[in-house]
Image (cartoon, rainbow, N blue to C red; front, side, top):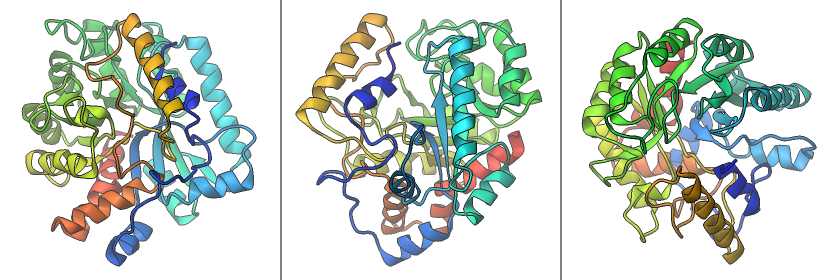
Length: 367
């Protein structure tokens, strides 16, 4: 399976215990941002699952030191089978149960609030690919019963349900895809359109009776890229009550320039201007604790990029640039973003919404 999670593991990224290095050390933030972040509910809309078997107390404490309330964790890659994904979901449920004093599986808004009160990290199970459903609408209900609370309709290519961003633009939501959207609405699963192409995005947003999400993406108006979303798509999402999470990927800037915090905030502020302060969040789509930036890690990334290109799933711009934003390559990136919002004149209330209140509100309407 050609999966970015394999890239992160191969580079020695801090998937379980964040490891600081010169490039990963968080910059100092204002007292106002530090206080706001400590009190806020913070939700990262897409990230590598931070928990695993055999964690030490030191590793657990390092994870919790991020200050995050909850994270949406992708499972099943984009091509795993039903059987493989079922094993992964059950293993993750067992791990969280084992470390119940430190982590909680999120299946409701009440769980997120409980995670904050009890100083535990909440983990929201999600799917990016749909191969694990094996074209079965019934499996949406089955996985929902195990707490998979967010699902997409396709990865970058086509699926029985719809088309991804690298697919033929003429392809869109299928009849089976409409059934899938209805099943997600019925069973309390959030519809995530991060990887859907424009036709699928438009049709699925309209078909859904509940808010749709784009948990991790960027803005086309800032940098035109297939994985970024247009102003029209952002407005339609907002009109439906959805939330758009800004990611930490190279697609924020034209190659070969590596994205910086200023680039990230250009997408963030544009989304706030277009979709409104009630419809924007954070969806890092990177390693929980940051990625060590070394020659070895970059070489491993290039190998994985080549494999993804051969498989036809690589998006434009998957090149020599690392899978993070300079200045956000650490576990407290959301605190840094909150500080950047305050420094740019946004109110504490807007920062709270971006940190997690917007996703919290949408989840409450969907689940």
